[in-house]
Length: 505
Image 1 (spheres, rainbow, N blue to C red):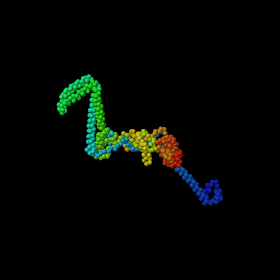
Image 2 (image 1 turned 90 degrees about the horizontal axis):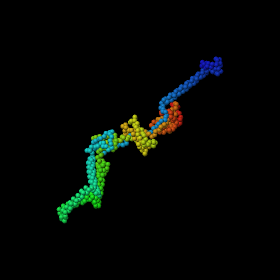
Image 3 (image 1 turned 60 degrees about the horizontal axis):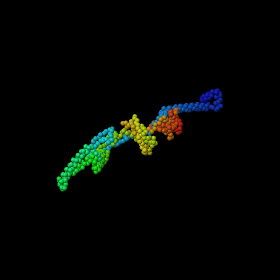
Image 4 (image 1 turned 135 degrees about the vertical axis):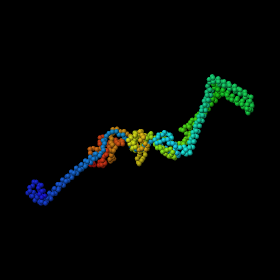
C-alpha cells in the first residue's frame, strides 16, 4: 500500500511502467513502503527546523527592540551648550564669631547681682555680675579698705601740690612786679605817693634812732634797750623798702637793687617749676591710666577687688549665662559666654591643589543645612601661609567673613562655602554628573540614534554643577546622557569615538 502510494506520486509513469521500475530496481513492496515513510519524515523535520529558526529570530529581534526601547526611555539627557560659568572652590567649615570669651569667676562667694541675660548686648568693661561683699574672702574686703585709703591719699596729695603751685605762681608774679618797678619809671601820682611814704618812713626812722641812742650802750639784757632797738630796726627796714619803691618809680634804682630783684624772680621761677612738676605727677597718679608708686598700690587693691566682679572684655552679645543670683561659686566657675556677633567668620580647609587659585578679597557663597532656603555672601579675609597635614593630605586654612549674616546664622553651625575664583562667559559646558572616568580619561556619553557614543573631553574650570570643556570631541548641541547604563563602561575599545548599541550588543 505504501509502495503504491510512493509510485503513484510519479505522475509520468503508467501502471505497467511503475511495475517494471519496481521490478527493475529490485523493490519489493515492503522496501518501497519503508523508504516512502523515511522520506516523509525528513520533509517534516526540515519544516520544523525552519519554523523554529523563524520563531527564534522573531523572539530575539522583538526582545532586542524592547530592550532598546526600555533603555532609551530610562535615559536622562541634557544638550551640550555654551554659556556662563562661575568657577568655585567648595569646602565646609564651622561658623565662629570674630571674638569669643568664656567668663569665669575669679574668687569664691555668693552671687549678688546679675545684670544681663542671654541675648543682651554689653559694652567693653561693663560690669555684668557681682558677688556679695559679705561673702568675699577677707583679703578682698581688706583690699577694698586699702583702696579707699590709697585713693584718699592721692586726693590729698593732689590738693597739697595744687596749693604749693599756686603760692609759687603768686611769688613769681610779685618778684616780677618788683623788678618791673625798679627798671621802669612809674606814674606821677605813684611817684608822689612813694615819695610821701619815704618821707614818713624817714621821720619814723629818725625818731626811732633818737629813742634808741640813749640806751645804745646799755647791756643787751636791758629790756628798754631791746625794745627801742626792735623799733629802730623795723623803722630802718620800712625806710629801705620805701626808698626802693620810690626809686623803682622814678627809675633811679641802683644796680644792687636790680640784681636782688632779678635774683628773686629767678628763684621764684625755679620754685614754680618744681611745684608744677609735683602737681603734674599728682594729677597723673589720680588718673586710672597712669601707674606710679602710689597708683600701683591703688591698682593692686583694685585688681583684688575686681575678682568679685565680672566685666565684659569687649563689646558683644551674651550667648550663654550660667550665673544666677544666690548661687555659691568658686574660683574658675563658668559664669557667661560672650561673642562678638557683628563679625561672623567661617574657617574652611582648602586643598593644596586649589589654594593658589584663592585670594583675599574674593567673593564667596555660603549655605547652611539649618537655613536651607537662604543663601549668604561673604569675602575671603585671610589665608594661612603654611599648610597642615591630615591623613597625608595638605590643606590650607582660609577664612571667609559673612557680609549679610542674620539671626539664623549662629556660632558652631556647619557651613558650605563656595569661593568664586573666576567668572567665564561663552564657554562650552557639561553637567558634572555626566562625566565619567574610563581608562584614565574623562568621558561623556552622547546619544546618537539608538546608540551611545563615548566622547573624550578635557575639563577646565568647574562649579558645583557644571564644568568648562576646553578640549575633546564634544560639540555644542550634542545630546549628553546623564545616566549611562553600567554596561556602557565595559568597553572593548578606548573612548576614541566607538559606538555602543543599546541593550548590550
